[in-house]
Amino acid sequence: MRQNLRMDGASKQKSRPLCEGDEGVTENRTNQRLSTVINERRLSVIFHSLFSAWMLSFLFEGQIFYSLADAYKIDPAGTIFCAVAAIFAGLLLCGLFIKKKKAAKRLFLCSYLFFIAVSVIFFFPPSALWTAGITAGSFLAGCCVAAWAFYLKSGTPKNERIKTIADMLILSNVLMILCNMAAIHLSPQIGLALAILMLLGAFVFALKLPADDNAVSSTPSEQKENPIGIARLLVFLCLFIVIITINSGLMYQVVNPAFAHLEGLTSWYWAVPYIAALFVMRNLPRRMNRDYILYVAIAMIGLSFIGFMSLGRGAASYLLVNTLMLGACGVYDLFWWSILGEMLEFHKNPAKILGIGLSANVLGVLLGGFIGKAVTSANMRHQDPALLALVVVCVTLVLLPPLHKHLSSLLKDHAYLSEFSGLSAQEQTNQIDLAARFGNLSERESQVASLLLQGKTYRTIAGELYISENTVKYYVKNIYSKFGIQSRAELINIIQKKEDTTISK
Image (cartoon, rainbow, N blue to C red):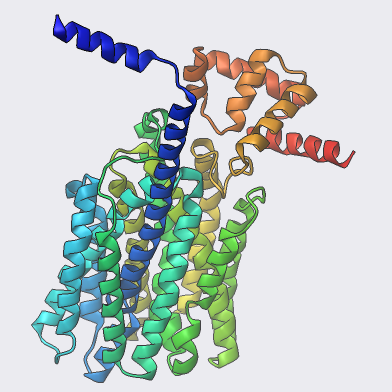
């Protein structure tokens, strides 16, 4: 009897209407949650940038390691290969054993301490510990990069991840430049000490990370997308990443050594075009169509190799070749990083998506390195590596259109693929109202158009409106017919033109 009374009381308490005080409490909780998300986003950028600066300046073909190898007169090729291969393995396999956010945080904290221990080894003369330490560290570093996906997903809404990723890449490369300059102009040991300080900073900030597994940016409907479609997209995207990053491997093996005598210039300028490209892409207006920039970036890579073939090896030539090459790399890195960032919504373990995607990047660097070494070897000196790179560029040009088609069909609200997704809720509402007014749409057609403009798939629209996919296709056909168009992109463009005309009047 008492239990029933307790249940009745609890039921009445839950069912009573919200009063003014309750609304205030709810608003405060919402503000607190928003503040937590913002703090997590900032923390995720800072701690991962500090760690990445150490990795890029030391572990992943970093200038600190090359400077140490030069100081001790040893060939770094074997150790570098082990390091890159181990990073590839770590990226690929991380998702198999890191399945929760709490496990990701534990991985960061333990790995950062191990990285510090590994780095200390390199203050002593070369030994077998160098190769063992850098290989083990590289594997864990790959795991840490993949595991960052948990915080990228939970700390940043889907349509804002391109900015979070850009911020992380920019900050990590700026810090990397500082470490490289210290290693070159002061001493490798000072550069290594600075990199270790960044690892300590990463550890301190990682201690403050939340460990709950609530991903605030995910929705149930997004988690139930077709896994087969995602797998196909991921395979195709990985193929594209491998092919385009072969140029990066060629750059390490062919272009960079050719300008090694310009040590003072290359120590700081090498990553500057990359950072500038990231900054420009991050701050482009959301309405601007970015997909054409991908084709421009491919042209930049081709022109950089043409310049490498035809120009000398002076400072001016380096500035031109490096600006074109690294600027294009910045565009493409942000492109597939942000694509992978949005794909995190479609898998319960985001480390798998990010790890597999970025492992394709590392694989491309490995293949490019092999090709570069083969082309520059004694028995193939008659072949120009830049010509081979141009062939890679041509293959990329062939792959880009079908890739863009696949991406557009699945990730319609991605910053590179759509202009509509970046608009505010009020702007989207205005666009939808314009669609109904200028297209003379029925109520149901307006509902379909609303969801269509939000980037929803036919299956999602059918589920939300409780109709079949065939019925959705019927309404979409009617909408396109009334506007005299054939695609969603044309619908966005015509509505925006109508809005601009209305505003001007």
